[in-house]
Amino acid sequence: MAVPPGAVISARAARSGPMTRSPESTCPPSTAVDVPGTAVLPRLLPEVAVGRTVSASLREHLGRHGTRPSCAGDWRHRQRLIDEVARANLTGRGGAAFPTAVKLRALAGAARPPVVIANGVEGEPASAKDKVLLRSAPHLVLDGAVCAAELTGASEVVIVAHRAVWEAVHQAAEERRRAGCDPVPVRVRAAAAGFTAGEASAVVHWAERGVPAPTGRPPRLGGPGRRPATLVQNVETLAHLALIMRYGASWFSSAGTPAEPGTRLVTLLGAVRNPGVYEVETGMLVGDMLKLAGNDGAPLGALLIGGYFGTWAVAADALSLPFSAAGLAAAGASPGAGVVAALPATACGLAETARLTRYLAGSSAGQCGPCVFGLDAIARELEQAAAGASCDLIRVRRWLGDVTGRGACRHPDGTALMVASALRVFRAEIGLHTRGCCSATQTTGVLPVHDQVLP
Image (tube, rainbow, N blue to C red; front, side, top):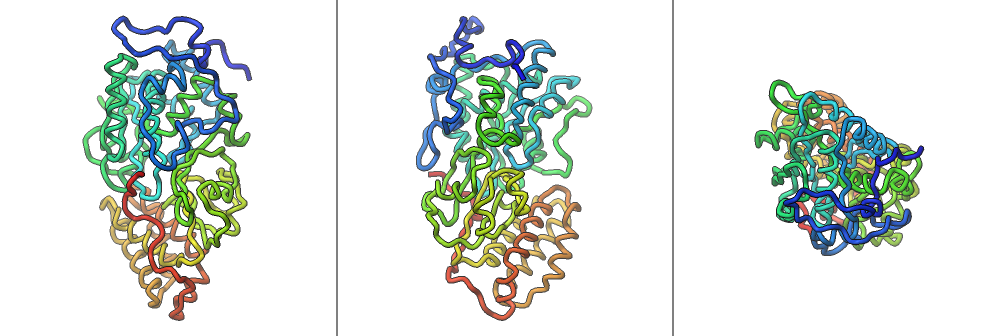
């Protein structure tokens, strides 16, 4: 489908005339850049994010991507731009994979100006993609957040960033403020600590009143009383939005699969030589992704796909699967937060699951019994099984059903999903432990249960 006239302004098109800026603006004009080739990766990061990266300055950012196109205008113009996002089929990169255009369209008709919140909390220890993106390309995220604000008529942008990268994002926002680049106020706030602090409703509550309490309901599309509606988007999603507004849906869809276009940032860790964050096309085979991080065929026992709310899968079955929602469905998994953790064959999957479950039980927001007592009981039973004591798996499965869908938020649900997959994948290992044996030769934990320090 052809792009409506003026709906998307590429970097080259933006240079065809003088850049429109307020008289007091000192935002530097973009240098001459070409539309990136459809096969050129990475799109989001200045370079493959393994090892040290530094934040791009505003001038460097403009030199690579060109000027941010204006997404303001009357209702019809903004709807045409949102239609372009829909044609790109951009979905959220924070885990839920909700269509971005649906959120934008809902907020564009809000009774009062909404607030755009960029979620860069990333409280999961296994994931680093959002931190690496915010540190290495903060201006691309800020571009996307401001585009989202213009598309929805928002009055303010709030960037909630992990504390490890908050300063880099704050400096980038200040650089733009001094240059007068952004038409809406941009506020950067350091995220609360903890796994549940990254849940969308917790981010809203943190931004509004400084209490990172997650709830079972999604953030408001319409605020009650005097409270505005909120648009919460993962920072990677906003970075993709900034590029779609520059180059269009066809360019975005030239990577990935027809059903799930684009690229993804993935965190690869565990039994790989070079753990880190990589940008890949959606649909790349899981085994090929691990080769990027230096797994050269070393024996693997299982993969944890999607993060700590994800799914364990037998490595031999999962390596040939495409990393996409459709491709991973064969293993009962999904891309989730963009994490693939490789468990070596020398490690005990039951012991690893017990460690992760204890961590998740300890990460409870403390708001309800299913989380406070249910997850603790499940973790305790798994710890006993890992230690060789008797384990009542029938009772554990019943407890998983008891906590699912009954919490004050989705924390018990995500934990139960991961544990249920472990009971299937590590069934033979659990049987060995009931007889006082273990197939593993490695006794140390593989996956992190504390915030990783970025390189």
